[in-house]
Image 1 (cartoon, rainbow, N blue to C red):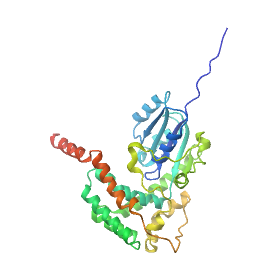
Image 2: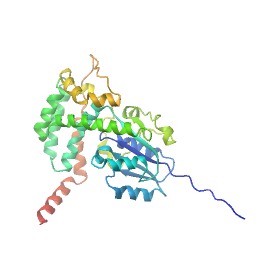
Image 3: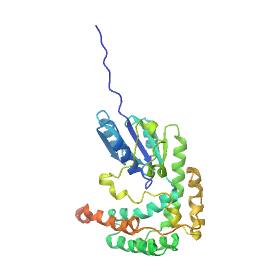
Image 4: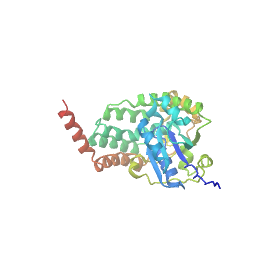
Length: 305
């Protein structure tokens, strides 16, 4: 006498792909929070085959939600393609690609960049405080141009933000090319829909409803305004030609080709998401022992022959 046994259904593992500062963290954490098949293992920005293999090993007993950034695989494009195509890594049930208005991405990157400076020893709390005062000046004067803010950013950190603008345009087109090449495997979710609590474009692929969450755990420093069309407040008419020259191509590719700014727009920006946010990065740095880590790293470098 022979019998059959029902094998368990495969776990619905999810890959979330996007560019930096396009909402990938809060979207992936929202998907994790709504997942109906616990336990869930959240994998944050893997950069190596070893980390992905470990997630694969865990995928038999935990649902994997893996968030990865396109820019981290720029020099390993073949591996990212293999991951998306399912040639290695967990057997993803859904592969979600995030897109965001590149103009808003630019502003978000500008606000978050001091975080990287702090942790990579390229700046200290004093410089970030000086940057917060620049933002306070912009909060007080809505007529200040984006180019003037960029000039003051360079004075504080010694970094040319306009180079970031040009780089954003080039690499954004690379991302658009990747999405086009893998459109049969990727489901696109717009950041603007996600912040409006609309995940309808990806819920059929996931198989469960999703709502935005604020529970980001140790990744809370990535949260800022979660707003759309913030770029309109930042770019004065005198800024638009330069910004359009650099970002026009990627904006067209991703479907953000409307450059109309309402004439009666209130250009004031709120301190909570700008100067206060900059100061919160310093508090987070201190809370996580950034200064102690910096000291230990410098001591190690001195002692290393």
